[in-house]
Length: 267
Ligand SMILES: Nc1nc2[nH]cc(C(=O)O)c2c(=O)[nH]1
Ligand code: SF4
Ligand SMILES: [Mg+2]
Image 1 (cartoon, helix red, strand yellow):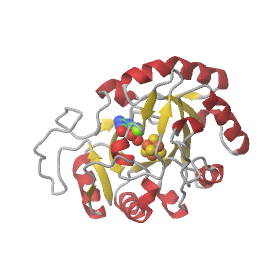
Image 2 (tube, protein in one colour; image 1 turned 60 degrees about the vertical axis):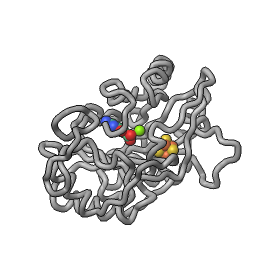
Image 3 (tube, helix red, strand yellow; image 1 turned 120 degrees about the vertical axis):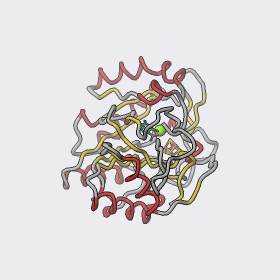
Image 4 (tube, helix red, strand yellow; image 1 turned 135 degrees about the horizontal axis):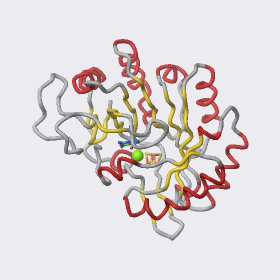
C-alpha cells in the first residue's frame, strides 16, 4: 500500500515492536492522538494516511486568500511516500494500539487503493475489535469495503474547493455515490457524517442543494468545518461557520488537532 510521509501515526514502535529512533510528531513518548474532526472528536485514535488523491483541492477564501489541501503532501504534491505491505501496517498498528480502539483510514483518497485497503480492514476487523473510520471525498464507493467500516466520514468537495483553470475530468461532487454511503450506513447499522468545509457563502447554497437530493440523513449527520490548514485561516472562518451551523441546525466541526498541535503532519 502506498502511504504518505506520515504513514501510520503517531507511533513509537515499528512492526516488530522495536522502539523507533525518533519521537512521534505529537512530542509524546507514547503512540496515539485524538480524532480532531467529526462525531468522534476527542477519541484516542491511530491514523493510517494513504497517498494519492483523485481531486486537487485548492480553496479560495471569502476574503480572497487561497488555501491548498491541508494534506497536499499526501494528495497531489506527493513527497516522501512509501510502499508498505498490508501485513506490516497491520502489525505496526497492533504494536502501537495499547488501549486505543479507533483506527482512522485517511489520505489523500483511500479508495484509490481499494484492494489493499479491503485486505487491511478485513484483518483489523477479524482478529481484533477495532472501530474503523474511513475519511473519503465520497467520489468512489465499494460495497465490500463498506461492510468493514464503522463510520463513513464523507467530505464532499464543493465548487469553492477547486480554483484550477480547467475542470478535472472527474465528477468532483457525486450525489449518487454519497447516497450509496448513506444507504449502506442505514442498511447495515453503521454511522456516517457529511463533513463540509466552509470557505465562502456560496458553499451554503450548494450544501442545501445537495441535501435536497439526498435521502435518509438527519441534521445531526451534517457537519460544517471552517476552512483552515493553519490556525490563522481557521480562526478567520470560525465565526461564519458557527453562524451557519446554528441557523441551519447543523453540527459545528472543530479541527481539534490543529488547535492542540498546530498544522504539523503526523498528529
Ligand atoms: N488528529 C487528527 N484528526 C484528524 N481527523 C481527520 C484528519 C485527516 O487529516 O484526515 C486528522 C488528522 O490528520 N489528525
Ligand atoms: S479530496 Fe481531500 S485529500 Fe484530496 S485534494 Fe481534496 S482536500 Fe486534499
Ligand atoms: Mg485533513
